[in-house]
Image 1 (cartoon, rainbow, N blue to C red):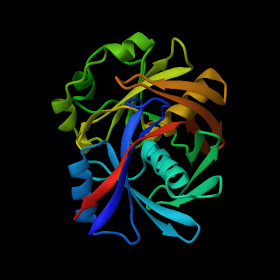
Image 2: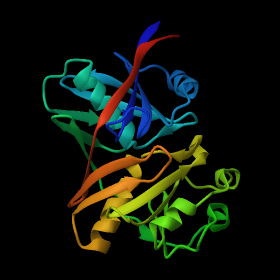
Image 3: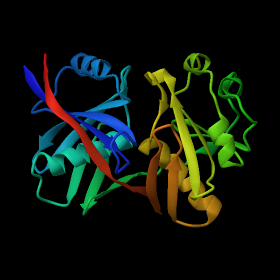
Image 4: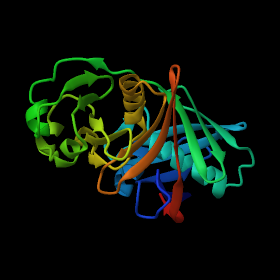
Length: 261
């Protein structure tokens, strides 16, 4: 069987920036084990698979280790391919997902806007071993939704964090967001998820489902500019709209090709 495959750098307008994702169009779903093997072979933070459903699409995401419930950058990358490579004529795509409901991506010129669910993180205690594994300063706040979110005072605190990834991977948690007010933006963040086979994710849309409602309340503003300050660095323009968050960014195609299974 020959399948098309694309790789896209999302949340950036520069090649080799943002967050890379693989995209595999399908006409029917492959067995889960087979999709997982493709994702492991790609060895990127996410591989997205999609199939047409009338004028809409069904969408699933796999890390090298597991199927995940929500992924922003691979959704943006998938929309980019549907718009630019597959001749999709409308300016809005509806994706049906297994656990995140309906996700919408709209396009104006070369900017894509994701319409995602808000995930408000709740204050909590850190699980045993988390703060030791993260290292750095003691956070000002600790919150939890799907992932743990640690809030610090300065952008420099975020840049200085050097986690013990082996220790993080042993904890019974999904991911860890670290965040602070930005020097040149409203807020900055980094995201660590070694339990899913990704030590540090370059730019993470799902993490911003937590970050946007938090910083909107903290800064008393619903329009936000953010950087994810990983080595590849990503830039997002964010909005809080009730129980939804909007994240806008650009994308660049890196490769197109075929895989054989």
